[in-house]
Each structure stands twice: as structure tokens, then as C-alpha cells.
Length: 338
Image: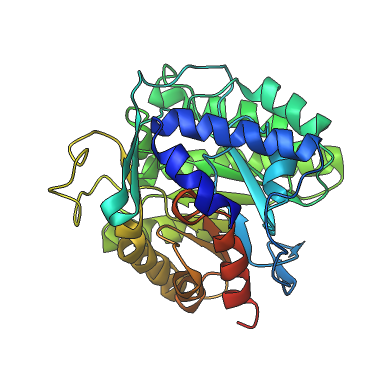
């Protein structure tokens, strides 16, 4: 209910300013022990990637890039929180403005460009947090690291976040870092996943626990590309796939304000495309690899549809901007008895 009053004020602000203000408000509310959401729906625990999740609904990466608001976000009722994308070195991201609302279609276009304070700052924030739930940490490469050396950045991040993560997501699908999606190519992906799995095995031995690896992929892939990615996931025994990131397509928003802005499109218009990719992976992989569905989850029905398409967990982000905390409760209730 409170968000219904706050939303007009937030939407009157520049989108990135509203984003920053929301995170600051959640941090303040947590510090003052103020309620930020109505009573959460009762979730049903589910075991995925060898981890016990209290419910199937999680927060997608991108909202809290630096792990500065983990406890405040967890208070909304999420079964898991994913922070990042984080890179080895701090970077400012792309020039502003870089975040645009398309309210007519409940959509967002962003070209943030992995703006973050660097992996060391994120780890420090995670260490200070009292959050005891499942934390995913999403890792990427710095914009100025040559694509042929991308694995160095992913490995550097993996080593630093491994002791503090419930699982680690490898982001190779953002459209806002030059050439990043090349890593979804067959040979590039094979080399990257091989290096990460070797490092995961070494870190598991060092720390005495297996931290799952998830691969986040794009929705803009054809059947042959998806088959190649599925084969690589199976071959390297990756723990999970997250389908999907934002799309470069503008289908369904072509004539709206900001539709011509560069960046990835999220929200309602990406639902069908992302869910199709999810379903293709599910049919190809069966139960061999856990699947997390994200993209266009705007209500309980769309959250349930992700499970029907083959996901074990569901994540949301843009829907939270348009619906507020009530969406979390609705999505948990809609997926509880799946």
C-alpha cells in the first residue's frame, strides 16, 4: 500500500535518481527497523543447486550492484537475493542518462554498463551484512579487459566472492559491455566454462564447500545457439542456467518514447522471448541442470508460467519497479504449490 503512494513521486524523478533513492530508503528503513512490506506470503521450501531456498522467488541481479542493501531487500520477502554484476576493478559504467522507463508497456531500457565499486567493495559490504539467506553474486568483466582475456576477470571475481556466496552467476549476456555476448559463442564459452569449473573445484577443496555456478544467458539466441550452450552446460556440469538477461529487440515498444535508446529492454515485453528460451533449455536439458526463470515477471501468473516452462526458481526486477513489494508476495503465493 505504501508503494502506491510513493510511486508517483519516484516516477516523477529521473529513473536512476529514483533507483538510488529507493535503495537509500530501504537501507534507512532497515537501520530504523521500519517495516517495508506487508506480511510476506508463506513460502514452501525448495531444494535447487543443492541449496535450500525458503521460497521460489528471488531478486535478479542489477538492482543492488554493490551489495549495499541486502538486508533491506531481503525484508521484502525474497527467497534469495542476487547482487552485482560486479567486476574486478571499479568502473563508472556508461554516461548518463542510461536508464529509461517505458510505462506504457511496463518496461525499462538500461545501458548501465556494469557500473560498480569493484569486487573488493562488494565483498566488504557482504561481510558487514547480517543476512543469513541465500546470496547469489553475479560476476562480469571490466569494460576495458580484452575479450580474449575475459576469463582472467571472471576468475579473479570468482576467487574473491566464493567464500561469501551461496551461488555465483557468470554474466556473459549483458548487451551493455562491448563484445561481451561473444562469450556465448561455442569456442569462447567452452574455454571460459572449463576455466571456471577448474577453479571452482580448487576453491571447493580450499574452502570445504561446493558453491554452485550459474550461467546467465541472453534471450536473443536462435535454436542452434541454444543447443550449443546447452551442450556446454552439460559438458562442463554447470550447476544452473539463468534465462534470461535483457533483450536488444524492440518488438512491442517500437513507437514509444525512449524505444530508440541503446541498451537492454526488460519488463513485460521480454516475457515471451525469455520464457521461450527457458522452455527450450528445459526440453533440451531435462533435469540435468537447474533453471532459473527471469524476464517479464509482472504478476503471479507470469511467475507461475516460468515454472511451467521448466524453471525451479524465478527472479524479478523490473516488475518490482512497477508493482512494488506486493509483487513479491503475489509471486510467492502463486508458486507455492507448484
